Picture 1 (tube, rainbow, N blue to C red):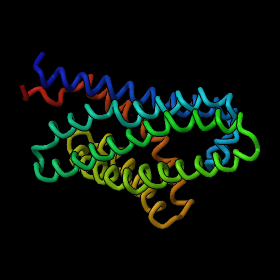
Picture 2 (tube, helix red, strand yellow):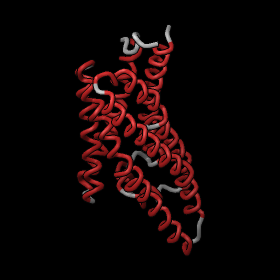
Picture 3 (cartoon, rainbow, N blue to C red):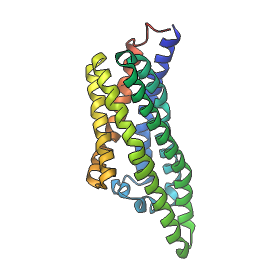
Picture 4 (cartoon, helix red, strand yellow):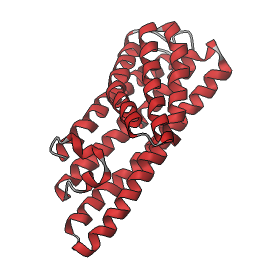
Length: 234
């Protein structure tokens, strides 16, 4: 097995693991919120979940950190190596956008891993006079991350990566390429929602991303384990 084939196997395995952890992130988060979907409607609802939810929220964000971001770095590099010959300058540009997306998203999730659980516990044990201040800080941190770093800053480069590489990928794997394009379109809708401060667009884009990412990562991971992509490269 060549180095390229070994890296393809690594990218496939990490993509599959990312899919599993992305689903786990949602499931664990919902468990901490008693499976109340309305709790995702705003930062105040999450804060109201109480100290009992802190551990669930922490592990949900850890799964999110790895499932939606860190474990996809090998895949981003694999797609670049594989699809670059089609148009090297644009493949380089799209991949840089993708790496930026993964890095920013990972940093944002890492912040929430530390901030959210600690503040849930502090809020639950605080006196009434302190709760208002904690709630204000919690809401501001959450909005800065979700509407800022994980909003336009993350999703615009992410949409560029998925739409660009999806166009190249559909020449090699048509169905998977089209799914990648749809994934990118939902991320673009999410970006537009953030730009226009339109909660409906943001929710449509976010929901699409939430549902498609595990399917996309699992599909491409299994495909990389079953079919050669880098066999001609050492």
